[in-house]
Length: 124
Image 1 (cartoon, rainbow, N blue to C red):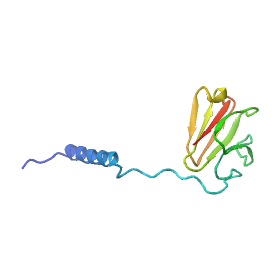
Image 2 (cartoon, rainbow, N blue to C red; image 1 turned 30 degrees about the horizontal axis):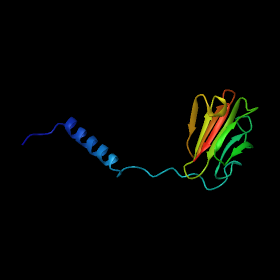
Image 3 (cartoon, rainbow, N blue to C red; image 1 turned 90 degrees about the vertical axis):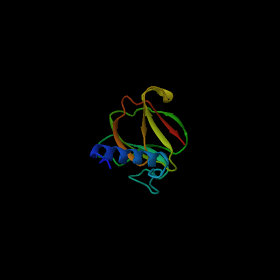
Image 4 (cartoon, rainbow, N blue to C red; image 1 turned 45 degrees about the vertical axis):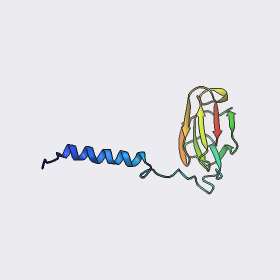
C-alpha cells in the first residue's frame, strides 16, 4: 500500500471542499438587513448623513427603485444601505448612474468623500 504525502492529502481535502461548495452544501444564506432604524435611517432605506465624521443626522434617503442625481453633497459623509430583501445601492461618479459605480451591500456603513459622487442607484 502506497503512503499519501501531506500535499496529496491537502489537495484531496481542498478538492472535496470545492465540490461541496459547487453542490451548495457549504453556501451561506443571503444577507439580511436590519429590521429597525439605525442612526436615523429607517429600515428599507439607503441613507446619506449630513457632512462630518460624527454626524448622526440623515440628509438624504431613498426607499424606491431609481437613479437619483446628487446636488450639494460635498466632502465626507456616512452612508448606510439599510434596505431589505437584498436590494442594491450604488454610488456613481457620473450623473444618471453613469461613470464608475461602487456597490454597497446591505447593512454596510461607509464614510465617503461625496465630492466626486454625482448619483446613486437604488434597485431590487
